Picture: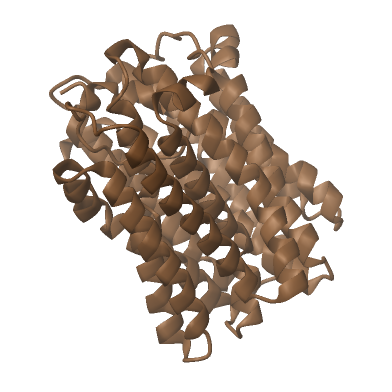
Length: 407
């Protein structure tokens, strides 16, 4: 509880940001489809978001060095608010895609500032509690955002996007008005994607498949939900079940990853994810409860893959490489996430809603096969770092998690 009070302004900004950014994706999909957007155009919006996310991750540390943390945060939050309110002024998929780029920049840039602030204020004695609270607030905001979808979809488009804009603007207030001193700006981590490939090709494959899964499900999941007969509020529950299942699975996944060869854990999670894809398609006509249950199960087996893959990569890294390695893994995640929504929406348009899970399942089959191949090429590391649940928020998250891995 003391941790929540100590970092209350930062956590409140996180919650507001998640409510704004987590709600816009499903709302864009439902509103766009109702207004005549094609499925490919809806997928384009998701890809545009992650393109902006990539740009924001790269730009934010550099802007902090120029104008400071508070002004950087306010600038990015304002960019997100402009992108949200702009949806009400023009109804065009290409214009909305530009706005979603701004939203992606806002999310990545704002979280970079928040994590820099946390890094500056957290100590070794409070690091574990702080990161635990940060994850809880982050996931709670993401869950609430999905649960809002039904309510927002039932009101006028102008009102719905204005509500999200209010959340985005409200995120500025706690952080910009805090009396806590702004963090001393540290340089942006060097972006060396090849470092991750050198340390663990399997980890890179894992984070790319995690990106394909997450981006596809979050951004085109509403299309799938609508195709199988879910209402707007049920689509929100469908997405929330996936997030909730993934959050609940982090502890058992971490326990397995710390006890057994992480390559086997990755392989079996991928096998289970493939089975989850098949199950979700098979029971799509069995009622809403079955669909929600399959979504939660799919989240439980697919969501931890990123963190298991990241932990496996860090097993082969030196202590002074951890920040750059975390940034490199986030780079590969962004690459996979940019491509996935547009591709999956095109597949759904061509082959029907089951193509979403066929695509995701195929990615997990490739990951499992590649995992077997890598096990034949290299032995398991003698020393393993502790499993860490990694938020996929910015290129600088590695600074907050570095000491957790060095224990």
